[in-house]
Image (cartoon, rainbow, N blue to C red; front, side):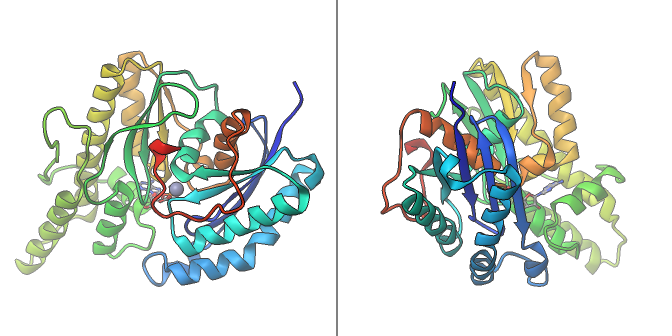
Length: 337
Ligand code: KG4
Ligand code: ZN
């Protein structure tokens, strides 16, 4: 088989990233410039600042990815880019860079859904086996996605309010921890005990949807009440209790979905997949079920362009190319991909 190289670009949020991927499986380069430091003092991502950083970084990062892969534009089979969802001003920087390269070097252009990218990060680890189920947990998304075959996505459940990562970040903020708060809560939780009673939103018995805003409010109320009464409350125990509630719901629904859909593989995807508590619990429970569980290494869980290149390969094989009117689309629909 002739080797097919894809240059992939990702600028949907606060990471400027470019990668070169061979045959949808092999990483030749994977460069990520994080902007976290610039957004930290605001306690979250500021869209205008994100766009400005992307403009400053994009050509440098693309050059670096091409150099590390040791190839020239003429060696490429296609250029891929995250087309959505994400911040529109941020997406546009990547989309325009991809269009310029595609036009200048007469290459096919491929638009990729950001969540398809997170899911396909797993294809850089192992061969995907269908049908499969993925739990996508990130700062903007919490979804259970069923895949019957390559490139087909059915969202069987999603959050009705906050995404998991968003709930982590808000609880962390209440505990006066730096942004992004997920890793800090994870660390605190490891040294605490889940002694505080917090709610679990199971929703309707057969639902695969999620809800985390009630839990987030319960944590904030618990802290406020303790403060008003002058009671000491352990941040470690509160973090452990919050994390236990989140993980219990995520893992139970994941197990039920994997069994009901009779899947061959279960994948974890998105930034919150870095959570140690979640990784451990899923590993233990899926071992018991006898279903293969795949969890990418941390650098492929958080936003990167390698995952976009992996997802784009499926579209390259199917010749599903974008036209030059491709635009950044904050509301891009995964199921219509
Ligand atoms: O996928 P991602 O890098 O960006 C989005 O597409 O949203 O996910 C970022 C999110 C943040 O909310 C961050 O707090 C969370 O992932 N996160 C974690 C951990 N590491 C990152 N949440 C819980 N535990 C962690 N260890
Ligand atoms: Zn992401």
